Length: 160
Image 1 (cartoon, helix red, strand yellow):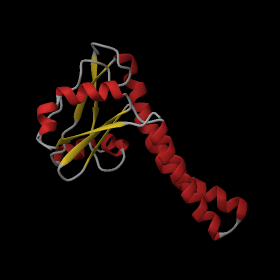
Image 2 (tube, one colour):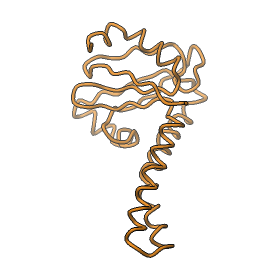
Image 3 (cartoon, helix red, strand yellow):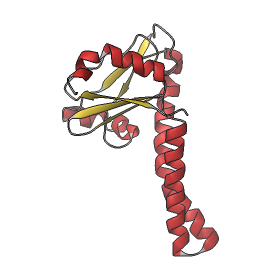
């Protein structure tokens, strides 16, 4: 069951990433990818990057191979578009075919369930979300997550 592995670190620390590509797992990556931790969609952070930096939101830099850099960002943006489109469009299609209020509710629930299922069974290579005190790093690759946890063990231990 390909569920993601989540690791929580305090907001105040800079994480240490393994010297492997976060997207493919290849050793010694040659560039970095940047994500802004937000409590909403990753694309929100990418689009509002300059504004968020003004308010003290620090980007997370992670190692990636140059050949996968574009694929990484396309994955992030496409996932966020799907997360927005499914619950929005499914009720419209359901109402068009069945012409009732119940079809709108059913379409919305079906859209949400489809999106949740996609995120659970086909997780992003990495997802970075924040809350008030912590940043959650979710990895699709369990071995990469374990290596990340070991490298950040002193930081992670301060949470427990």
